[in-house]
Structure formats: structure tokens, C-alpha cells
Length: 149
Image (cartoon, rainbow, N blue to C red):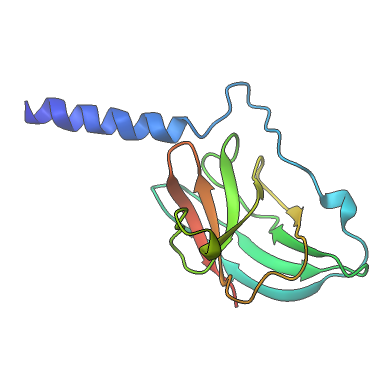
């Protein structure tokens, strides 16, 4: 009976992880790279720490372009095990996403591919948002976080 429960638990966790992938492999994430103009000024950045047995790596930065627009930037080496479907990036007040308290997070975008990406922000994020979180919404688990300094 113990082995059955362990096997059932493992199957449940794996099904949650798989649910963060899109069925057709074609993510519908926005591509804001064309909106970035000129030289970028670094506001703050941090290195991702993987969570939930994923291989999430890379750097998250808040940058400002020549037009005065702000972006969240994922680095060239950004990757996560399930970077399609419902994987999203948030700004948060801590390394733990608390979706029950809207004042503790800001949803940035769906993350649909590895590599460098820019996501437009409505302005300079509030200074209380000192972490970036890569999150799997379907499974409600973190894939990684980065303290932003």
C-alpha cells in the first residue's frame, strides 16, 4: 500500500509539471523585443535560482531604453524546463509568490521560450518588488526566483 501511495503521489506531481507545457508546443507569449530602442540602462538585476526540480537558469533585469520605456529582460542564457504554456514571470516582494495578496506581486507576462526576451512594463516598478519569480500557473509551483538588486 505504501508503494502505491508513493507511486500515485509521484504521478500526480509529474502530471502537474507536464501541465505547464502547451499541447501544440506553440506558446502565445508576446514578443516585445521590437519595442526596445537604443542603449539600455540597467536599473537592477539578479540571478535565477531553480526551484521544483527544474533547470531554470539565467538573469532577470529591469532596464530602461533610450525612449524612457521600462522592460523586464530575461538573459540570453535563460531557460526553464517548461518554458511554454502557463509559465509566467512575476515581480514580487519576496522569493515566495503570494497570489492571495495582490499588493505583493505584479504579473509581467507569459514566458514562452528560452533565451533573451524583453517584456514591457507600464513604468518603473515599485521599489517593493525586489524579486522576480518564474511560476507555473497550472501547477501553482515556482520554477525559480531571482533577488533583484
